[in-house]
Length: 154
Image 1: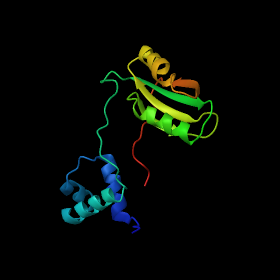
Image 2: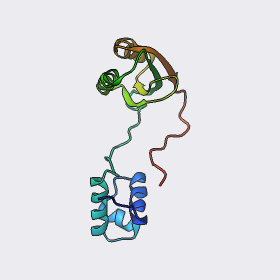
Image 3: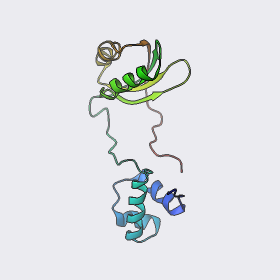
């Protein structure tokens, strides 16, 4: 059954994007409802997939993963079997925090975290570079973070 989000649903989502640790009572106060309907709405939003999961956003510098690299991967050839195999291998690489199949000059865009340049080099040579059909890799190193927003505009 398709469900259209109303203004209260949107307000719940906006509020949770700012702070997912709110208790049901705190969330209810923020959207001006009582806890029971807010709890039911939140559970429905979870069941219907509007809320995928709740996470803690960690500080990579404090965890010695301050090198952030965007890595563009060009495949020598691409078909369903090659794409599936590539995705399966990328899913097993903890250094890759995000992977997107893209159009244009490159087939994939990877977001990679590493402790330093040496660890990134080892990742490229020993993990990414050994994947069959990878034709080229272009790395863009992030020098400074200007804006990082996790919330979707609702």
